[in-house]
Amino acid sequence: MTSTRTLNVERDDSERLSADDTATLREAEFLQAALAEQQLAASRCAPVERGRCANCAELLPPAWVYCDEDCRADHEDRLAAERRQGHRK
Image (tube, rainbow, N blue to C red):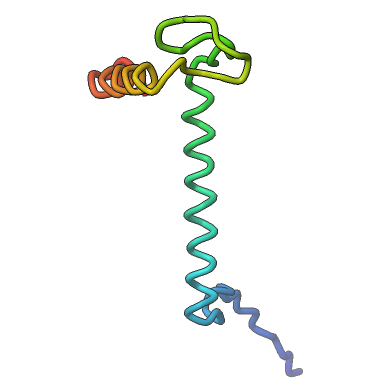
C-alpha cells in the first residue's frame, strides 16, 4: 500500500514582494512603530491645562497653550533639560 503525503511548506509572503512593495511594507511598519512610541510618550505626560500658559500660568484664550514664543521655548528647554537629567521620559 502506497500512501502519498503532501508537504506543506509555509512561506513568508514577503518573499514574493517586489522591491517597491517591500519598501512600502517597511514604511508602514516604521510609521506604526513611530505612532506607538508617540502615543506611549503622550500617555506619560501630564495633560496641559488649556486656557493657561503651560510655562507662566497666565490666563489665555481657551485653545492656547503658551502666551508667546518665548514661553513656549522656555518650557520646551526646561522639559528637555529634565529629560536629559533623567527626571522625565
